[in-house]
Length: 241
Ligand code: VGL
Ligand code: ZN
Image (cartoon, rainbow, N blue to C red; front, side, top):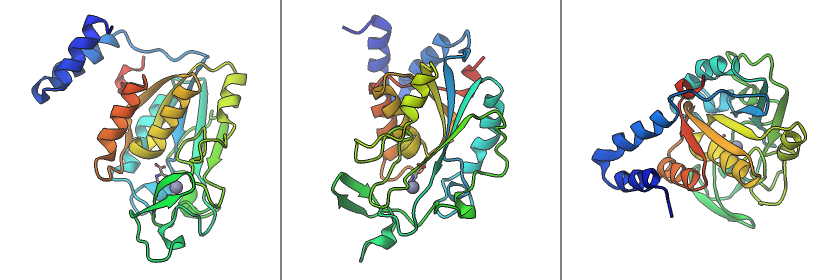
């Protein structure tokens, strides 16, 4: 059974007028502030030129996460950066499939794949990290999506569900137990990274105001629902002490 507070929150969520009550309760639970420790890592997902204004797959307001993440960085001993890093002609690009347009879907051996405009091609300026990102203490950059036939939204596991990137083992070997996920896009690479971090046994926070979403056919609401069911905690940068 759920504890009473949880039950109340779930009930409140069904009535739009009461969401603010649940939100307030959630915030109050963190009123003391969350203090990242030596076992915590900040994961900065795909803050690259491709995903901001002027890029090949721009996320609305994507560049707005940069100052928020730069500020958060001062609170973390451990920082991991990820980069979407596709081969030219990658299978996740609509251009690689005859008759398909960006944002169509395509059945792949590993499941349904949204097809994207060509983006984040290895070594291009488009794939570079945003120039204003200031993360001098970051310790590792994980690149993903470099296998021609498989996408990788998640920083932990490619979309085939069986090819790890190595990040899980890296974090575990370094004694990290909880991760704070930020970056782009909330409903794709951030959400998949958060879900896989839960699967790998980490405590997981997503810092909402340090993310921006693509929101394709309700994908943002669906992603939050999945994340919250999986025990991902949805917080704001102001909740970090
Ligand atoms: C992403 C779509 C395609 C992301 C990456 O970073 O969220 N989205 N590739
Ligand atoms: Zn991609």
